[in-house]
Image (cartoon, rainbow, N blue to C red; front, side, top):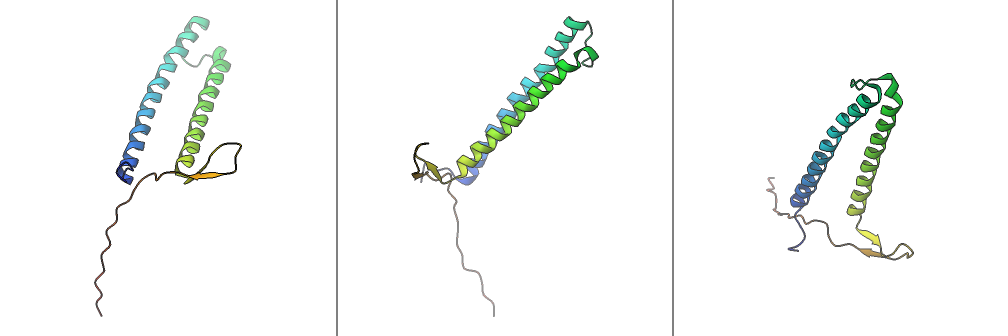
Length: 117
């Protein structure tokens, strides 16, 4: 059981990974606006981010970002579900399942309560 992490260790690792991913995606997201402004400046000569001539272009990229975020969330939920399931298919064309190793371990201390009559 030495290689199976405690529940808190598993949680901490998942949280570190989540925060790192959010940090990376946020940095990439903040790089998009200046690029769109530069395109607007080159195409229509303004850099407001609200040019009526660029409305469809901005709507397209907004849809692309929304779709990417949806995919990211769904992919994350599918991975979490797969991680939490205790059995997995051995092969896609097979109906046999194999038991996965434990995901985490939990320590417990049992003590008898005081009984006052």
